[in-house]
Amino acid sequence: MTLTTATRPNTGDLLDTIAAQLADPGIIDRTAGERTNPASLAGGAVGIALLHLERAVSGRGDEATAHHWIRAATGDPVSAGPNANLFHGVPTLALLLHAATALGGYQRTAALLSDRTVALTRTRLAAATARLDAGQALTMSEFDLVHGLTGHGVYHLRRHPDHPITHDVLTYLTRLTTPLASAGGRPPWWLDSGLGGTPDPSFPGGHGNLGVAHGISAVIALLALAVTTGQHPPGTLDAIADLCSWTDQHCHHDGTSWWWPPYLTDAAARATPSRHRPSWCYGTAGIARAQQLAGLALHDTVRQHRAEAAMRTAVTEPGWRTLLTEPGLCHGSAGLLQAAWRTATSSTTATAAQITTHLPGLADDLAHQLQTAAPDTPELMNGLAGAALALHNAHTGTNATGWDAFLLLA
Image: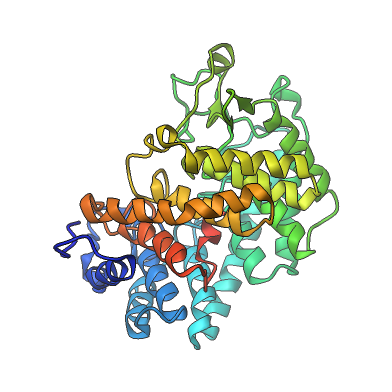
């Protein structure tokens, strides 16, 4: 999309310009498939509604625009079937409406969507538990953040941390530390698929995914966040420690920084490791935040400090940051900025303070990127709305709605 400001504005003006350009729900191309369905978080109306909602609740935006986008997101029939998850369908709208109650209203609809999400989660949980009981290998859509039960857990932990369904989802996730007889020594969350979740000849032995979007770091982060609520089931701390001990085996230090690979394969285990871009989805930005949360939950200061050191290098080393060629949340500069902001504001260590000093520079770089090479899409994950949310967060120093819960950063 082309921003209409003729010269590089200050951040507040830029954010106002972006909000104005994203004011009309008609900007979404609804012919582009499920991704742009109104009830899609990644590319539909829900994601852009989150931007306007955050701006309105923080006193920086127009409530009428937020309500307009919420109506656009909730106006069509919505899926509660097998394809419904945190990023699409009933759970997505449930997360949005839970946040929207901060504006007043929406309580009845939020309660209805909550009930439907509980029922959907119970169905998904029963099937996934039965497969675990039978010793069958996991599928990505069963457990990950975007498609699976970790994503369901994000909603339930925010909506009702003391609800039985929250306890049951967390209990299921703690079981992902139990070795499967068929795993051949691999962790039970090793997937027999490629990165897309389906069989792939490029991944003949499958892969172990360390990322947040589709891998085990999301489980680590959710379990750690549950500990902070005090509503975690027995075995949660042991599960976090067990999962982290596996990721520790694949944490590297190259003389400059700690970092983790995005995923593992049999072939990768024999190759010389190299740094991946420090993105949220598969990279060190998301993984380091999950490790910091684990360190805080376990009172493991070594883990916490290592995670914060990794994030510090990600935000201070220009050569590493240049691998982020896009501004978006998923695998771009906005995702690093938001992960760094959460890391810095969760800790009082000297390393966290160093990260804090670099946040204004990161925000300025993102603002310049949006002014000179704005995304072609208005969407949340790879587009303008998500980048604007991260920039708003850094500019105001507040997060009024907890919008980044869907990234498992908080």
